[in-house]
Image (tube, rainbow, N blue to C red; front, side, top):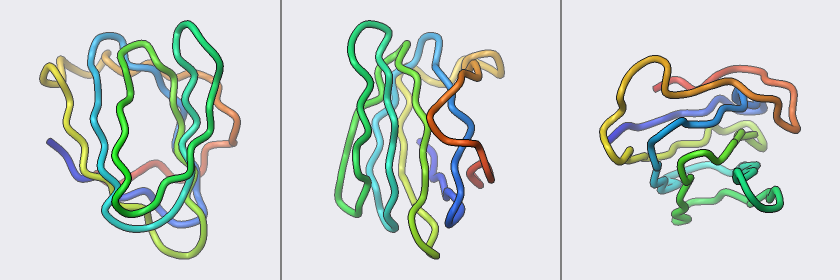
Length: 102
């Protein structure tokens, strides 16, 4: 389990996980998440407190934060994070700004 704080008015680097699934719960802040499954259409979902979502293995994703407040997310990774080569950078819809502070 991890707590991520995405900086205000910024976008994360778009990545895809090779083998893990992540479950997210938005604690505070507002933003958007872009998701592109390995098979299927891409989707942009609004993020707000109380929302939970799944990021399946093989699904590319990127987060963008709205406004002046950071976005706080609690995340659980299943199975446990296997190592540094798990996340692979990909192209997303937004230019990356600041990466999250974990």
